[in-house]
Image (cartoon, rainbow, N blue to C red):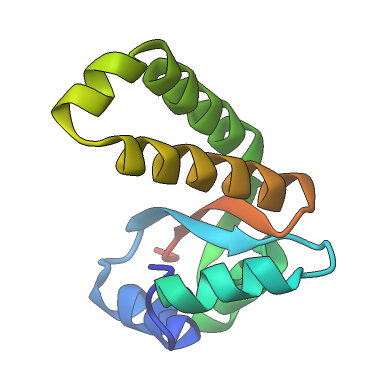
Length: 135
């Protein structure tokens, strides 16, 4: 979803295809409320992300006609996953390098560090939205 430039237009489409009482649950990358750092903006542009905060996502759902809307910031879990992935890779460094390369190992570690920094700056979030189409 974070690759869709016209995300606000997607919610009416989802609304249209759901039957009355239908439910939607989406998780997607988003932006936080911190001042967006240049390095993060470069990362977003390179990945072709179009990011929104939870309030904006909720607004898209409301405008489409959804009810019982709930948004949740899952960024703490995102951080935990990144730390787990990094720890597993560091623990298995020699195996990783023998299967892939030292360059890829270093690249992966740098990526985790960057993402953890974006989270610390409240730039990079992982968001959830749940909504229902009225009966």
